[in-house]
Image (tube, rainbow, N blue to C red; front, side):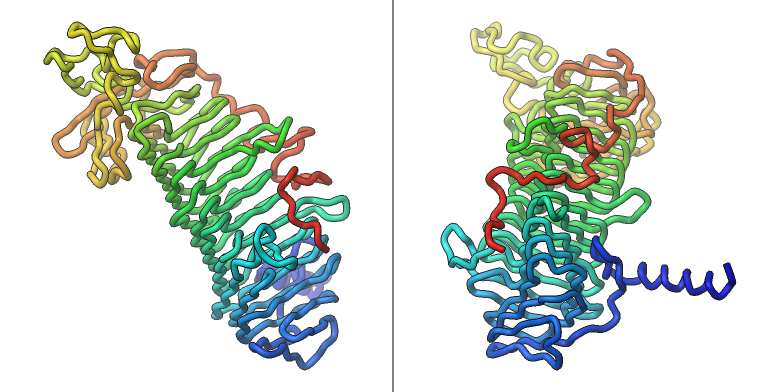
Length: 525
């Protein structure tokens, strides 16, 4: 190949990578396009090629790049069914729709929605954009991506979504003609969805990069099948979830990179979908930084396996009853990374494969592993081994021993807001932080731990000691009696982190030809 040809090829490759304008059917760089101006009374454009206009309703009928600006209190943009290669550049657009979605991507379309550099656009809907209580044109989202559509949200500008009806963004299911997907990259995205989900995808949701700030009445980021955060070898997105019921939810949830902060009332991350059968649920953390706090739910909860093989994870669960920082119907495997999981309850009932050394302070182990002085019984005698007796049996004074940890909630090791340190026997701090809630036990795993070594949790004048261990534990953490147990073989879970979907395909591949039962609202074209 001649040198000029090589230079031309490199220039073309760089042009494609420089912008966000790749939709998933055709990669094309955004340079310029048809300019369209919104006002409260009309939509104006110098060229009507590829568009139709009805008052303040704009319909895109052909591929192309359309640059949208202006302000309108009741308008909408619709990409027609089956139209491919559309890029909508939001160039300081403020658009509200009273009865439908401000932006609608039709069935089996391929659309890139780009926030132009240096601009801020705001889209919002009204309560009537809800088909349960609203108009016949309701689409249940500010940005609606119908079944079979492939939509990319991107750009280096800012996009604000105010969802007053239901969802901020709703992506549909895969069809026989189109493999649905929703991808978010680069842009600054702010979503307030007090009624339902901030982002809801039925088929596949990829949050590759960007800065996301989300609040939701239900889930912040939801996918019926596979939710991926970041990608291996990348910095990933910055995701801040300020309020929600559940933070991240999908049948398979994979966090590869990024910085994720979650404040939830229920589970911070949940791998589940009751509508699916023959699906291997999985929650996999292989990189990134996750800081999560739940008021009353679990921290990480998987209906299958939960695997942490990298990254920096901090989890706080304030509930003092039966909700736990790490919960899985299958096996919880910790093989790498730094994990600090603490809660108000007195332990974590799970099957733990500690491929990497871990240390547990307090909980059911108080006074046995933890070295924390047990509380006194009502008769003034010391309670042995954090209970030491079967739940429900009588104490010497005739009262009944309480369940789990020997007393409600276990020994309080950390008070919310208090500074704490985990240090080795030489006094070297391995972890320092501030307690996100009152904690009766603390689980810590790091490559800095040595099996059998002694470690101390310190907070104020309180110090609790415990020994690091590896092994497989088939009961709750409270039954971990020190180093021992069957040694894991170090092999990753079967299928790695791909969490196979039905028929053995991996969750990074999009589901084909199957709609989610009772979830699609895409009956309209």
